[in-house]
Length: 317
View 1 (spheres, rainbow, N blue to C red):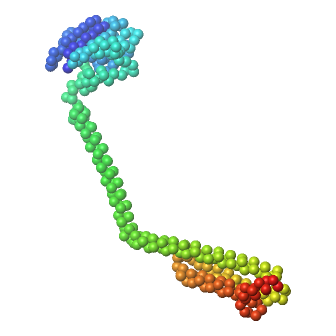
View 2: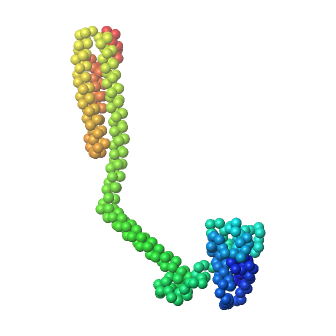
């Protein structure tokens, strides 16, 4: 509640103080006696306007004091200084008035807005305004405009959320249709095929080891051939060569089988089918190797089995 206002050097007031009563107060007087200056002084404190020069009784000491609810707010300026705000004559706390800003602490104490003040030449409040302006002002005063804006904001958010939900539902339905189309069964079949492929890869590794063993055996055979050439005469060598050529032909046949195994390996990786039939060929290959090893123990002259003693004699020439 506004209790009093005091003007020093402000316009026509050298040092004036007006005390207000509770309720309605009326200031009357002849023209040019400072009635309007009182309202201007009040607005100077409330809005920090005007920013420029003020018609003053004393340009070096312009001060306005208002007492609101026991707090005395002071606004002071001089001809050379923009001045300051002060509360309850506290010299330790002066508030800047730069850039025409009213300090928050001052605004909070006064707790007045433009809606609370009517100047001398303003129209009667809301009486001559249109219905739209009256409603707008009432909404502003009661905060309904913020409620309406909040409701509008919520409606927009709800509409957007509903649109997003519809989009998500559409995607969910598409996913359900995709799952119902048999993709799960295909996935299970794919897992079975993957496990089968893993088994085939393991078997392929085993067959590759067998092929490596065959390659090692072939190298040993050729090494034996070189040693025989050194210790057997030409006639014996020719007979041995005939026998060896037969063995080489068998090795060639073995090479063809190895090619079949390579082909089988590729077939395993691509389709994972017919691994059993290819494994049968590998077993047949092993039998051929064993047979070939046994044939090395046969005499190239007579075809009889060679004993250890016979082999030593033969190697010694």
